[in-house]
Amino acid sequence: MIYHLITTPECNLCCEYCCGKSFSEPKSKIKFESLPPLPKYSQKELDDFLKKDKIKPISIIFYGGEPLLNIPFIKETINAQIKYKTVKNFLLQTNGTLLNELDKKYVNKFHTILVSVDGGKETTNKNRGEGTHQKVTANLIEIKKNKFKGEIIARMTIEEPTNFYQDIMDLINPKDEINNFRFNSIHWQLDANMWHDYKKRNFSQWSKEYNKDVTKLADYWLGEMKKGKVLRLYPFLGIMNSLIFKTNYLLRCGSGVENFTILTNGQISVCPIMQGIKEKYVGDIKTTNPKSLKLKLSITGSCLKCDYYELCGGRCLYSNLYPAWPKSGINEICLTTKHLINEMKRIKPEIEELIKNKKINKKDFDFLKYNCCEIIP
Image (cartoon, rainbow, N blue to C red):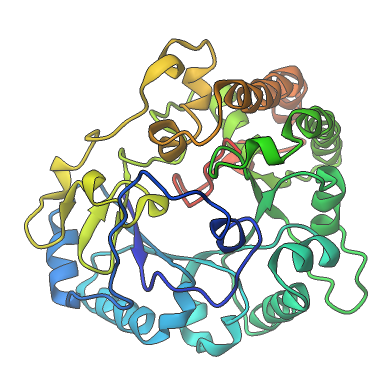
C-alpha cells in the first residue's frame, strides 16, 4: 500500500497549467474545504493507523502543494518511522527548487524522488517560472554528488504547443552545457480534462502531433534497447510490463485500490488531486481501518465497456468523476491512450526477442507499483 502524505497544501511556484489556470476557472460546482497549512495529527496517530495496514510493504510519498515547504514534518516522519519500522519506502514528489534545503542524510533515505520538470530549460521555465530549470537541475546534480542512490524521475506535464519528442530528448540528452543533468527515468502527464479550458485550446490538432511523437519515441526506446539500454519511460514501461508479464491493475495509478492520500486534517482521500473534496473522503487516520478503504470510489461509465480498459484502467479517477471537458474532447484523450497502447503492442515482439536473446533483462521492466507515476498520461 502507498500513502500520499500531504505535508502542506501550499506551494512556492505558480505554474501556468496549475495555479495559473485556476485564476480563469469558472466557479466550481465541486465543494472544496480549506485544509490546515500543516498536519494536525501526531506521528503516533499516523503510525497506529499504518500498523493496521496488512498490505505490505508500506510506502509513503511526501506530497503537497510543495512538500519541502514543511521540511520539519518530513524529518519528523522519517525519524518516527525508522523508530517504529512500519514504513519500508519513502518517496518525494517535489518541484525540486528546495531540495538543497533538506539535509543530505534525509535526502539519501528516499527510495525515489519525482521532480516536476517539463523538458529542457525553455519549456520548463515557460511553464514554471524563469530560472526554475537551472535551480532544479543544479539541486539534482548536488544530491548525486552527495551519494543519493535512489531513482530520480522527471515528472512532466505536457500540453500544446510543446514539442513532446524534443522535450523528452532534452531530458535524456540535455543541450545545456552547465546544468546538464541527464534523466534515465521519465513520466509524462497530459494536462487534459482537468480544467474547463477545452474551447480555449487546440488539443484536437496538437494531439495528432503528440501521437506521431509517441510513435517516434517508441522507435527510439526500442532502438536504445537494441543497444542494451532500457530507458525508464514510465508510460511505456508500465504498459509493456503488463503486456509481457500479464500484470493486472484496476486503476493504473492505484487510487482507491492500493494508493490513498492522508490530508493535513487527518482525513483520507483516494487521490491527492481530490484533497479538500469533503464529499469524497473515505475515512480518517484516527478511526478508520485501512482494509475498509478499498474500492469505495472507482471508475464508472463507458470506460468499463472499452476494449482498452484492462490496460488503461480508466486513465484518471478524478477526471472520470469530475469531467471538465466535453465528450468530444474526452474522446480525443482516449485516442491518445489507445495509440500509445497500440504502439507498445507493435514493438512488443521485438522486445520479447531482445529479452529471449538476453540483450536486455526482464528485471529492467520492474518498478515500484503506484510510485506516483500514473502510467497512462
